[in-house]
Image (cartoon, rainbow, N blue to C red):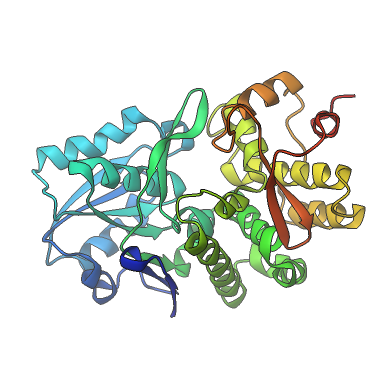
Length: 357
């Protein structure tokens, strides 16, 4: 087992990475201060892993909320299912919520924890590669709105993140690839040697080779923790973690939540960001080609949907959280392994990237 730490003063917490951790009560119990626990999961994950987690916490009073599965259910209506259970079972301020699932479950559970009685504890037990390397770390929580993705939420750090790599063996290949997109992101924004390592090991990762996966998860979490420690509430540098996300969120919203997986939309969005970075004269054609090739090896899309127009992109991007005083800011790459958040880019270049002549 590897143990990392997100250093945020009194809000610091550990990230545990290893096989078979999900059912380890000794690992979880020190991060639960009360006797009440509400496990939030979904209808896909519950039959696979809920019993193991319940057994690990059998000394506590356990309640369970099973949500419908899918990004299309990441909304305020579904969020109320969690509040209904907490209120019905009279959970108090010492309760701990545990998110057992992917990014949707983790984001919604964290948001419920941030809101319930003005804030209670929660623990992340992510079960998808994407949530293990990205959404479970850093305290971003929230739900989608029909007009924009993740526009309603709060910063609320977990007590701990428990990453059981063994659960990835039951993950569909499409979900595995979606998580790989977020791993590639860390190489592009902060870690060029890691990007090169990914190019050499992409086949092993997609084959779920244990050692390769554990290393990729560890390096991704390390890179994210370093950025979060510098800027917990995304006032500046943390926004680089959104490389490709402004384009990607527009794709998700336009296509309908759940039609494209988050990682698929981010993959296409990262290629678009690299294309714009090339047009701005910052990266080379080879850098863009390497990025496209790496994502394609994982079976990820590298172009935007053909049915999306410039107007759709620009309208949806205008409600992105990085828009400041009416100015669209994008995460671009100055060189492989170094990203920047900027509003200083050519509108003509942006239109060219969006496929408009």
